[in-house]
Image (cartoon, helix red, strand yellow):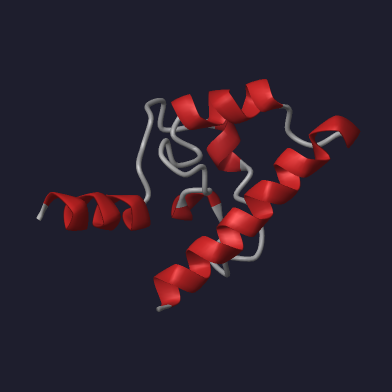
Length: 86
């Protein structure tokens, strides 16, 4: 339940970046780069959990300076994929 709420919150924040892309938000090319660098999920586009500060309210700016460097999949998508394969 908590994971679902977190994923919804993260998805909503991600959509705000996409919607605001033409007024100074993240550009679509930057979103693709974030996906390839592992900052957002490669399947659904939500921010990965380690992109947020400890309290979960602010983005962790360090993740943009030192990204994982490879595409990653969020826990929700991994669980969905696992359920489909069973």
